[in-house]
Length: 113
Length: 113
Image (cartoon, rainbow over all chains, first blue to last red):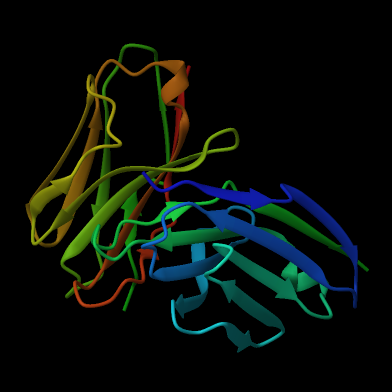
């Protein structure tokens, strides 16, 4: 089945710097890609959903890159601020498996003032 | 819209006791998922339902774990004879059948002493 590897497991950056997280997946049929944010004690909140045909997706304060050739999904928090401190999870769906998502292990990001 | 509602938020059981976790999906959502979250394993898929029918329970431990969805407004995850290794946050999520995005509840933190 699908396997998703996420790196790094922990990331500490200074306020204003970028934080870069990468996931690699194994199933070439994967079609939907997600980033979720989880603040301490809270549930997972959807950050962005990416379709397989879209390579660069920009959100508010972050960019998501999809490289289907290398089977790599990346999240770049640009100009991070303390409110970005949280755990970030990538997730992948093959579509044919329904909505079932396979998650990365997560990256705990700390943004220092 | 109250989102996905999970009860209880916290549950403490003694080894060997039974634990029942409840999930109320978002109204109108016909797919319900159960995941288990631990620091070591991350987010593990357990099972999911579509239109109340079990679709995939490949992540469920074969013994002691069972899930049901008796009606469209709630699902339960039951763990019999709980063991300390069952301690985790159990997350429920729901989605529509036409979209891939999962919306998560706040989870139930199960602690088995």
